[in-house]
Amino acid sequence: MRNVTTIALTGTLAGAMLMAASAHADRADWPDNFTVGTASQGGTYFVYGSGWANLIADELGISGGGEVTGGPTQNLALVHSGDVAFGLTTMGPASDAVKGESPLAPGVKMDNVCALFPMYETPFSITALSSTGITSISEIPDGARIGFGPAASTSDTYFPAILETLGVNFERRNGGWTDLGGQLQDGLLDVIAFAAGIPIPAVSQLEVQTNVNIIEFTKEEQQTVIDNFPVAAFQIPASTYTTLEESANAVSMWNFAIARCDLPEDFVYEVTKATMENNDKMRNVHRSAETTIPENVVHNQVLPFHPGAVRWYQENGHEIDESLIK
Image (tube, rainbow, N blue to C red):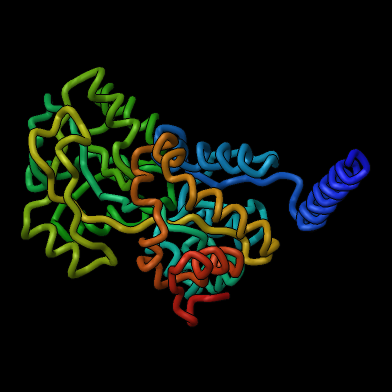
């Protein structure tokens, strides 16, 4: 009996060693570490991206972290060139990039950028100090100093054109969200036009320190913007900020995590699996991740999906259009 037990244990140990060797072999072409392109500190991308990087590092046992960047447009360029493995972007800049219309690389079709998973919608929202008396877009004074976030970010790419379409004349300012929030509080800016996942950390911080107005779009303004830009109608829930007493009309774009298309399929499969199967942990990273679920893959009709991500979606009953598979 003892001999049988010994043989069984030996077989079990051999099997475990074989499985370990197989797992190790599967990682042979994995990168030793990875970086996620995020955006400026004080914005949702930085919090979300850095937290997601830490989650993947913990789940897969590989070194990784977030990197401060100029945001979605720059992240597309950084991923395409191989400077970072992953990044976060919005569908507007992604569409421009694949068509070779990125302001950072005119004429270059970024074909080494693949979609991974849906993140959340980015609302376009406006904040002013209550002391300015600005409560609507039409009340923004001519020549107002408006902060649009980092240069070439989604906000900086689209929000100036949106406000111009709505008849606002302004002086354009750029910078990180935290810095712009400080300038608003110090009276160096009149308005900040945010395009970021909610709650925006810089706005939440302002609410703690002073009184602010969250300025919504009228129904007519909202429709005008939808008719002229790649956005959809959105409502900022009243629960997002203490300042809001009821939901506020806005417009939004979807955000997706992206990866270099030449990353190993097995690696990206495991990254996708770790993300899609741990939504509770993702929500702990940032509450906007409640929409970081596989059902929302349908909101990408622009970028091809990485084969590793496609494999996870198909194994779990989520269809990906053939035209969107790299």
